[in-house]
Image (tube, rainbow, N blue to C red):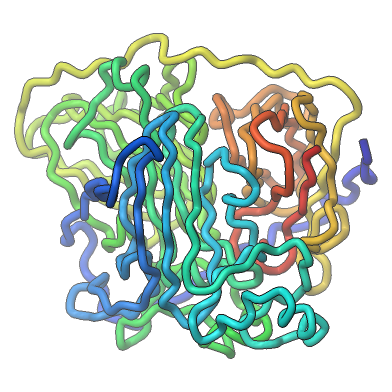
Length: 508
């Protein structure tokens, strides 16, 4: 296995903080807008071939801030996109029609899917206006012409492109878990997700359903994002080419990551939710481009989050956290017991990693007492322990003068940086000079430890995204045993990945 030089000079690098954008729109007072609670989208057909869904990616004007109509790009024209509910072992087929003006590529984050279905950044679905670019014979003639409208910045002879529509088929041969889907277009993921191309997905199985965890109206996906709005209520994302069709372009103010000053949960600014004094299951998804959160709950000394699941599904046993650290792309499945609060209580979910508006997330209003037959079992699931063998792979995350890099290089879709062996348990050592959320496609991994210690408080269970702190080495046990082929490892700070912080993997 190839290795790279050890990380040097970590302590000499001060952390480059993401840039916060400032809204000029009239912002609502926190906790005055109701939380939108999503309901699962109904499949168009269900049968022997699985569950089939269809969505159109289109532009729409929607109300995010009260009194404004904000132009977004959304799956079915919503912000966020529809809530998908999948069943373990039952294939989910998702047909997407691109009615936007730009190419798209959709990645189901956390899914164990064949490489053809993984939403590789150059596997683009072109809109009708650029349909000719889906023809490999025509794009080959233009591949040496950087900046061609709608084309990625680097040629990829292995790209699987299509015009107008594409059907992704996900086998769902995986554990019940919280997933999410989002655009993954090369060079423009940050801008297109910022505009609204993301949505929630939950995989269910019979074992989890039998545990007695809170369910039905007491199980709520919470997609946390941040945005900034101009005086007309439009999204602020600084770029000199608002069409997103020319050369990749990003203002230096957000090159370290775009952050807004308005926190949105399920698309609503600082919302509130009425709850009974019972247990609720909250599925947190950090769908922000670059903002990390340190979530806490107001309340008595014993108020806490009981974590029951991570990115890859249920933990072996519940864990208790007073603060929940969640980096971009991560998911935490928790139970909050509101019976600890008297009826009439206002329980604020705060973000202690920030102050002002970004330091507040949402509020729960405990309005009544109710019966509660839910439980939190002391044993949730069984997880195989992975033990690596062989020489470790090493990935070094760093920044150059104008690009973000892995092992000193920027992303090349056609040149694999690593060649993991199918079925082997390998140790990966990932090192960073800045703060980065590390994400791996095609499999889940286990965290062995950080620096010379063991796993951190938020590293337990199966993971596909994990935070790297500045100057930290994290050790992972990785096994690709679902599919061979081409996958990705990358930073899930979306501006970082757009500026080269991705690596192609070839699993064989």
